[in-house]
Image 1 (cartoon, protein in one colour):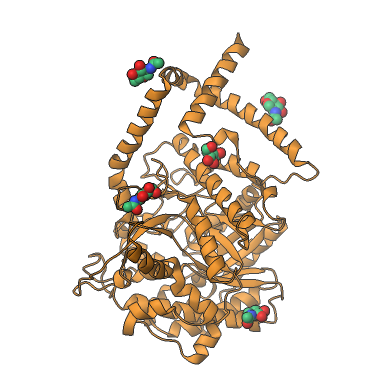
Image 2: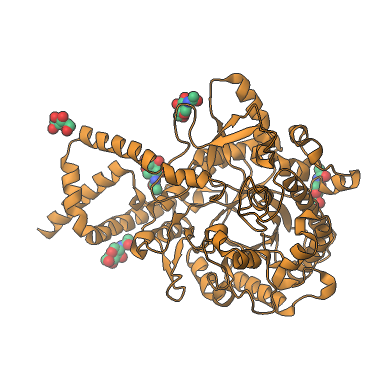
Length: 586
Ligand SMILES: *[C@@H]1O[C@H](CO)[C@@H](O)[C@H](O)[C@H]1NC(C)=O
Ligand SMILES: *[C@@H]1O[C@H](CO)[C@@H](O)[C@H](O)[C@H]1NC(C)=O
Ligand SMILES: *[C@@H]1O[C@H](CO)[C@@H](O)[C@H](O)[C@H]1NC(C)=O
Ligand SMILES: *[C@@H]1O[C@H](CO)[C@@H](O)[C@H](O)[C@H]1NC(C)=O
Ligand SMILES: *[C@@H]1O[C@H](CO)[C@@H](O)[C@H](O)[C@H]1NC(C)=O
């Protein structure tokens, strides 16, 4: 009787799962062993988003401390004073990484913790150095490679106050000093380095839209901005960011402490773009040129060839600073690899006329991006939970684009992930069931695999964003990207979401096991899990049974109706994502 009941439930569940395409109990489509032998899997985050302890251990206020304290309404009334308290809890969190079989951890060094005034002449904070040393040692003791980012948006506020940070060329020498100290202190143990995280986002969000610190822009773009100029400042910032990158790489390559097998690179944030109107060839041709800019050729061309692409010069005009010969030589070949943070895609279209009264960096190149194309198709897959339109094919296309345009330079996916939104009212149990996240990582890993195996793209690593829910900049704690749930109300306790289980299986090291045995073993575990889930699922079985009793055409109709309703009812949210004041992951 019992086994018959279980069998029936199993049958219903598996059909249900098939229909709804929420097939996560089938486990990962691929395994670690499907990827090249030395491929790295890790997780990523930044110091400011995890660390907390903002006023502890000799750290000075970073620009985000200032931004969230001065304009709390611009960070959902949240700040990162405590964040997820990684400063005190990193050992426990590293244990969790180890359990997941992660090979690597991408983290950043807090400039404000290491050199509190921002200037080397004022001294290095020994306690700050010790924190990062201890963290690195703990990672290595657990066989997890540290991948250190020099700059992930959290420089000391004093540099902002003194000379407007990246608006001034003075930042270049201060950044050079900071980088040199990092290489001197940590370069003997850290082999993977990145310079600047997402120059495009820091430029556009900080100086064109004003939604991220330093929060500057033209008043007509965002009335919350107290100062700024969206048409000129982004050009200056992005130029100085590139020079700061080059200065850091110069220090890296001169360093006697850095070992010859270490590498350094920049981390970009391309979206993939499909044409808004696929049949208009003229626009398509224009777009192909312009997309280079949107795909971040603005920052990639300089670090490889030493100059901006022609199209960027054409549209930037005299607002775009130029490089001296010396600067250009320093920039050339200054990235051993390209770090790619990939999240989503958009349709792109050409804007023929720009209102001369409303100039801004974002539209200077006459490209506009859209969520739907000319015939109303939405880009990517929209899930009611995941607030990012999932377009995994875009990852493969970007990797091919880099391969073709930049001579198959090595690439690391330095970030990839998806969030759901929690204004503090969602039950934890609901958030832990993150099928949409499993689906996202599963489909992206498949496209990544195709790019490597079928297309020959030289991709060497993949870092999921992120191990833990964390402080997500202007979204505060409402955007949950973690594989682990962090209870921000009750003692920051960590709870595994379902995606933890998926990652454990995906990353399982099967030493001594043949693949066949592994597959068999996994399918037994799947079966167990399916049965286990049904017990939890008990109360829904009535619904499942009645759902299944309706015939196939009815179900199809349901599906179609739901998805078109979903599109319209969710459009408000989608719009919000695109809205300049609420700018989810570009
Ligand atoms: C919009 O996208 C859909 C789905 O990819 C495609 O079939 C259609 O041709 C596109 N429409 C235009 C005008 O490009
Ligand atoms: C680029 O820089 C690397 C590291 O310094 C060096 O090994 C390589 O030869 C350089 N390549 C070119 C084309 O200059
Ligand atoms: C679910 O099934 C679909 C269709 O077979 C597949 O494309 C997708 O990758 C699967 N997802 C997972 C998480 O297994
Ligand atoms: C399945 O579950 C049983 C009972 O909980 C357990 O003893 C067994 O080891 C599990 N098998 C696998 C492959 O996980
Ligand atoms: C299936 O459902 C549709 C829509 O409700 C109905 O018109 C049709 O008669 C049903 N077919 C069968 C075989 O029950």
